[in-house]
Length: 347
Image 1 (cartoon, rainbow, N blue to C red):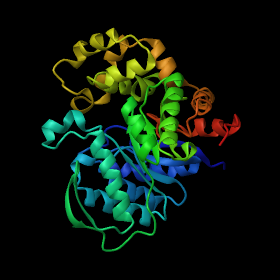
Image 2: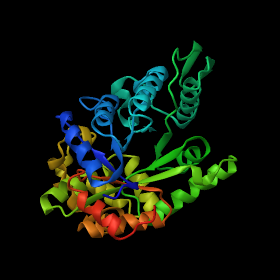
Image 3: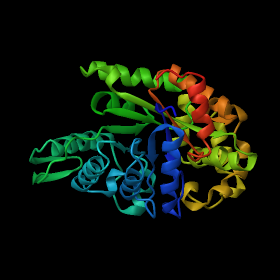
Image 4: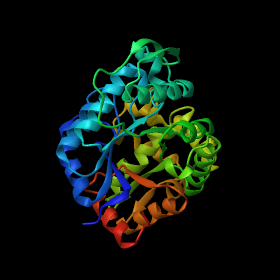
């Protein structure tokens, strides 16, 4: 079996009322040859730290990554402890992904909306804690008086930033070990993002090639139409419906922003607020009818496993170091992983 260090897959994508399903999905991912298993976080029954621990205990080879943890809901020391524990428990296979995805929910949670300045301070605090430093300072993520680890981990996990905008890409290149790019970006938008990250790294005196670029490809390889609708079309609605995020995505891709208002006005989304938390995914399929077919052709992959692998190869050719499959389960995407090896995607 080939092992693809440049091909990852999400487990428990979306809402997960039965998190125990991750045990089988993690084994499926390792069996299919995926190099990284990614875990998104939902603030109900999908705590990223717990799920990553289960994945680490169930597997022996794959990297285990969060995509992403919401830092505003954790004290920096708690987050540092979770990541250090997962890294030690997995034998150095853990990767910490951070982002600002909780921003739209911050008012309802009673937490501050995450900022780029806060994320830059946070990654510095995490690294210094893992190195054994005693931290006394004030900054965007807190005021500390001698905060430290009593026991040090055997190594520090890489930290990547999930982002989409130019300032976030600049920060990723300047201060993070990698970047996780948002779903539904075109190949051209990913190439521009890669250039932005690498340029920022070079300006900061870092090795541009050392900053890992992971691009997320929402894919439906060999899936029947009903399942593909849930995996791709409904997931697209959950992103484009969010004010601010939808505008960022269409702006990066050069698409028509008028479509967003038609989507948000669709009767099936009436009164729901943020669709991803208000509705189950099957409820979102109907509203996807207003999204142009070109958006799915340019920003996702729907077809045979070989076709989806070829689409992923386009993103690798655009400069991404890893393609992260989203939407399809590891078992559903196994054919795509097999095709990945067959078409000889460069690792």
